[in-house]
Length: 212
Image (cartoon, rainbow, N blue to C red; front, side, top):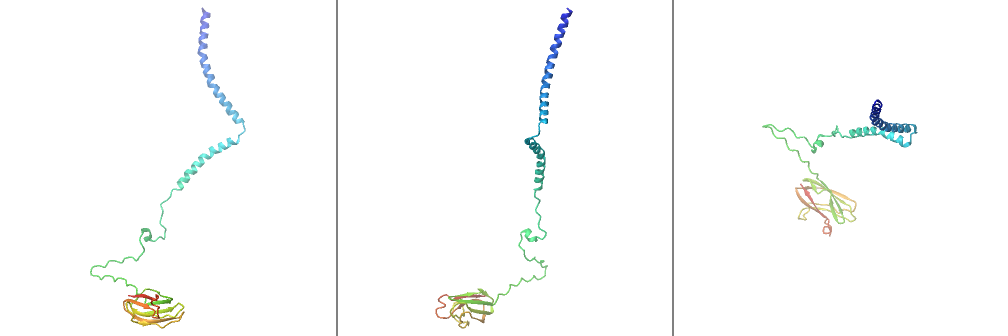
């Protein structure tokens, strides 16, 4: 009876310890395999791919930091006007004289700016077959008229009120490369300038001058 009890206790103890030993063996086996693989990798000399991988891992955080710094650096600041930029260009206003102070009650208004007087000189270039004015408009009063023969044939000039051929001033017949000047008193209006040589006016040697 005593021997049977001892055998039964030993069987129960073996049944209890067997699963724990199997679990310890299952846990120890992968850990040992992993340790062996790490030891083998440590003993093996580093290849090019391992070094490149390590460099890539070390450089990755640096590139990220550099990229973040670059993104921060390219943020544009608000554009400031140049130190010497005129105010009217900043406001989109054309430059011009500043308005004066408004006149007070009882004070006379400032006179309007005078219009510059028109020039009282005109040069007439004569060629075959046209008359060309240096300016189409002159001022009223004593006007200096200049005739220049820039053609190859002789030409002259007559100044008449528009719509007539009544001469107010007549120039001599000029040879090529010569000129003549005359002063003519002209009132406001339009005047006909024409060459009186035969057929020249009909061929186009006439023009109109305005006096104001």
